[in-house]
Length: 307
Image (tube, rainbow, N blue to C red; front, side, top):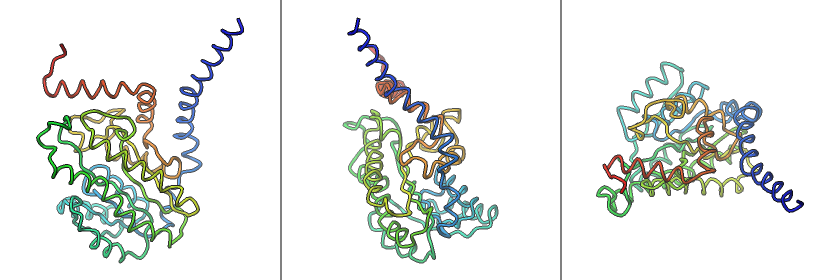
């Protein structure tokens, strides 16, 4: 009898540790902790300017809007000249802030001296949003997809990883020198960097790199006033997610960022959006679900039948 009691208690403790505690922690983070610990309101006092990459569309555009709404001037960086111009006009007209646009191709490795010169002109910096990135045009096997050539590999590494490292190297020393409470570096990762997701292998690996870099950088800056965060969203209805329509689990960029920006200072690595946290909770318990989903989507796209 004692044996079975020990077994039952052990099973209950394992379930509590693996299921109950993470679920309750998730609820706490997106409710009470968000109210108590969010540093969003401190950004305005940390500096005059926010720097946003990939700012002409999607999540970057949404971050530019939210930060401008909070009274920050915005340096908009993107390769899309027309999109930058339109976004700058929108922010200036709607929020009465100043903007600077910088046309930049992050697939090139020789851009950082020009970026650094432009950033050095800013009188003070509140935050950096490392958002720019590229993904696959479709789900694909790494070994035989025609578009995954050496040029694509180099471009993805430069855009998804080098851009984040380069801009952090430029901005972080400046934030540390300013030493203003509330300053932040926000890095867009992805849930594909947490749970292996087949047919997006290189993209997911680049996003895992971001999380590892952030987790390693946080202890280095723990005695400073700089908050460093990695956001790991699931699907957001952007141009990168062409086949997804907005829904409860698939927010628009504006819906996602309104939630994510409030999680600054609450969690260092977070999905940023409660419905994403719910889905991530389930998938983390059963990671095989992500593999099944990827394989099903890949077969459907390529009209492959199970035998």
